Length: 126
Figure: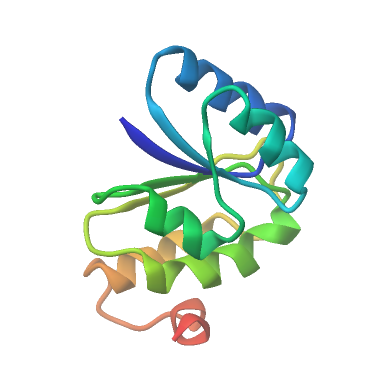
């Protein structure tokens, strides 16, 4: 299994460590380079940017994000043009704020054929 993980806080780091123990390939990114360096020592592949995550994970890509809600929209807007049809973006966070879950899902559905009308977030991502 190939997986990109964005966000190496408590939850993200624990998820990466479990997947690495199962011998799956993980590409990791975090705003704090020391968090990336620490998990790379355990066998993950580090990425310095969101674009690099998508380049290092083989297609079809799965990218998971474990980030605070305030960081989700900017990261999602950067990622959406880099993903292709049948690739997965999953926002996995324990906190909820506004509609930060619904907006990315709506934009993905539109980009990949699920909506008939363009959403405001999809327009922002263009």
